[in-house]
Image (tube, rainbow, N blue to C red):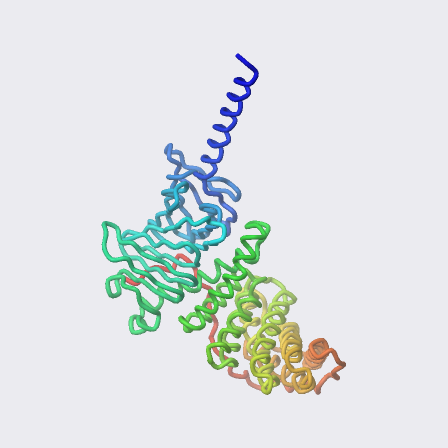
Length: 460
């Protein structure tokens, strides 16, 4: 055998090996993140059942099962991440063709698709009645028995019925519920008279925002490219919720902040900016989303300092966005936002097991400082009045959340510090705000329990 012939054979063998390796890799999904303290298992094609761990690969045709305490973030193919929520069962039907598809047997899946990385493929989630597919979007699919729902947070999803029939196409904020109008494309507003359908839509929107927030906030698990894409998707998805499913924004903010506290400020900013762009009442939206996000983030902290940091972050973000949209009312906005942040963070601290009486000063100070800094950045000429109104709002808010023994001198000093940072001037501390003798009525919403995915199911 000549050297040339041998060399050619080596090249052929190596090429075949590389192709086989690439094909094998393409037929495996990878678990990028596992959340919760429970268990998840995979039933493999050979009949073996294995416990799922973070970082492991799962072959095509395997079935994934999660319990009531676990959710998984699975890279189905490059550019497509499926969040398999609690109490869910998913089959990895096809991972290698131009239409990678998973089948949701029961439970909930949120899919995030980066059209720049999925290379023109059409990713789909099969339900009992059809395949919901897209090339670049965020959407949530829920299945309970034969009933299903699809809610789109961004992009367009097409649902192809099993066995043929008209294709249903839904855009951002669009809804398809198998038990409502035969699964035809509709909107959240159209199902408002159906409590079960409305609850399904609201919960689906909330878990979609939370799933995107987790990817955006964890580049170590998902990679810089995926997290950067998720950051953009987070803004788009929150905007869709504010404009198309506004009744879900409080639940979405609380759930996202509890799932990814480091993204709470981003959720708040996106929501306030969306409200301003769509002509909604900016202050009202800022109050709602700030209280919910502060509560969600603080519920994950076990210290007063952690709860205070949550209040500071979300109040700063909300006040800056809202005051930028309406600078003439910066002081009023700062007071409203500081109150909302302090109330929400106190509620969250209580949820995490802390004593409301021991966190009041820290939380009120954090909320006042954040609101003052954010509003003063947008309206520096009003820094002094902003400092005063933020201190009063934060004191009222912490008290409304159940806090007692609030050191109002400390709150006033923190508020002035925030105003000084925002305006780039020195702002003297205002007179200490008067501590409310009775709890000040809290802005909406009431205490929110972040969505537990096992509670999410289609209307039926």
